[in-house]
Image (tube, rainbow, N blue to C red):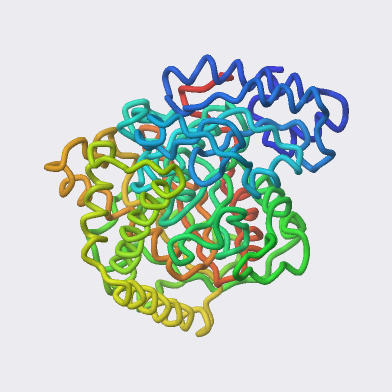
Length: 482
């Protein structure tokens, strides 16, 4: 079974269909790899081995990924009667266990995927590094002294290290794309409301949050999107349905596109590192070689600091709402000492915001959305830019253990956050692809952003780039397979 370790989920599912491997075999191999590597990575916080074995023994649905093991991020997606803490000491102290399984998790399992563990996440997903003070930092398998990104860093570390081929992820400001970029993976943030947030939520943080996965291949991302997209019962709104299955977008030629290239950071913030510029440049060269027209252009609306500041304000108010929501659900007040310094900083800001001011923030975000879309309407199909501003940061650089460290941590994390968060504000789809590695072997992701509803276009071009600059043979030094 060691021979299947670096196969993607699509290939592993084919082995099960052909009788060359059983779901039991794939699950036990994944659990053994997790047992061997998690002490070094700290990627998993709740093991669901007994539940996963019971699911396999009871018979799995005949979905497209039947028998393929996956991990579930311990944020938003709940599994009935299993521990669920969202990186919070407060929920861990309560040993909180939800009464029901969320809709997206049910869709993963209906597709035949086997959830075998819950992964580490920063407190309430609030920062782009997976270093919760409650559970400790998740290490990057490319370099154990560095962050795996966040807030889906636990899932990304598991996939990058070869423990499982699929890791659930969600994204309110870059939390799918950031860890994908840090760990050498594919990370798609879908169009707003493409994937449901039910049954617990209609939307979150005024529509900033999207759900999906991190994978090792574009075809896995397309196949899983096919399996889970579409509105749920009672959703307040939904994305327009695709014209055909997303996996069908991976075949055939792509007509020449007009693609804007940007090596800046929204808001005119500090410049990209040389490695980030090299990553974008490599992507631009590959796109031109594929016949696309690449020009130096980007939406002018992103030159101001408005998008990042507006999103940050909504996130801080949303974090306060999330804390109060948990108090309402559990009936137990949160003590300030149970929250991390950065979370307390968010709550301090939120306490000064009125209801009408929150609607001002939301309105301003909608105006930015229209301004950005005018650039696409003017003739550009895609925007190419960096996913992160520099190679993976050293552990500790982006987290604050004390109140005094909050300004330093926020200053360090903002450049990469500015690159991704505006896409959550506008609701557009974006995909991060591992197109560049540094001289010392660290991955650098490159981001493509399309108009709302155009995941089909993103996946077509991503598939082209995967063939032009393949990454399937690149594996981190810390892995479960060798």
